[in-house]
Length: 68
Image 1 (tube, rainbow, N blue to C red):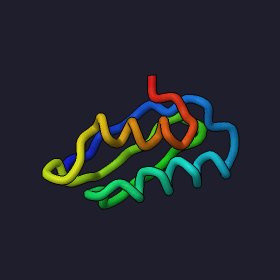
Image 2 (cartoon, rainbow, N blue to C red):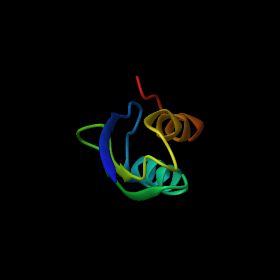
Image 3 (cartoon, rainbow, N blue to C red):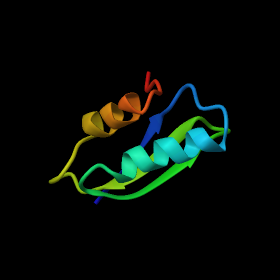
């Protein structure tokens, strides 16, 4: 398992946190996703054999948030 932190821009409330968390948890291979509204980050533990950081960022972006 690998853990990475992704910067997530555009979150403004708890609903945003829930949306980003759900988007990340729906990616195959994600074991855990902790989203921090105040820090504007998502810390994700995932299986590198099943997914990648790029796929995680794509899931966040598809949910309507910026990862740059």
